[in-house]
Length: 267
Image (cartoon, rainbow, N blue to C red; front, top):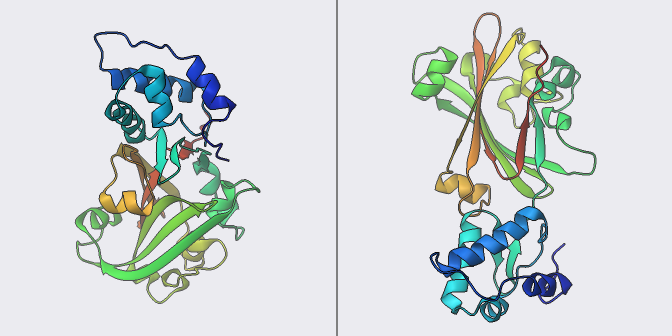
């Protein structure tokens, strides 16, 4: 919950700050350093309002442009967000934990449960929008599926949200010779989702391979995931295999600031 400017947390923070800045380093960077340290230490917590421009000007004895530059640094780093007419706030974070081993286990989707149920706590609300199309496979998807480039694939695109916060984009590509005309080509693939339907169609899954990378988002990804400036994304490319062939390539893009990838490895 946001706390308005001028409450005790703002006054205490301002009283504790140095009144003079050190030479040799730009003033806006020193102010940003102070704010950043307070955010990372928890002195300024999730959702707290940062001191106003006027308060920072009075505290550090600098021009308004200097204060604005300091606040913009924090926004570009993804530590703070500005709300028009309200001020600048510490960005709220409640990470979503993706339990890869549990969600991909046959005991999860094979029992008719959605994969995300392995990740979501009881007090969190999960939602997804989905669009299903038939397209020609890109070179990368075709190579991963071991099919000729341009071969038809069924594509299931989703935007996943938790507690109303966009969290993940995914695009699952399946060969049309397997998925076309089946429940997989429908928005609601039924209990257990795509993997349960694949097994019903005679394609028992043997293993999954995931590649994880980090990069900056495209403009469309930043817009759909509502990403503040400076926040990267994590990409996961998962390939599902039967004993005979790859049957799905899922290209996943997640908000790195709100997502924890958990892998349990047993020797």
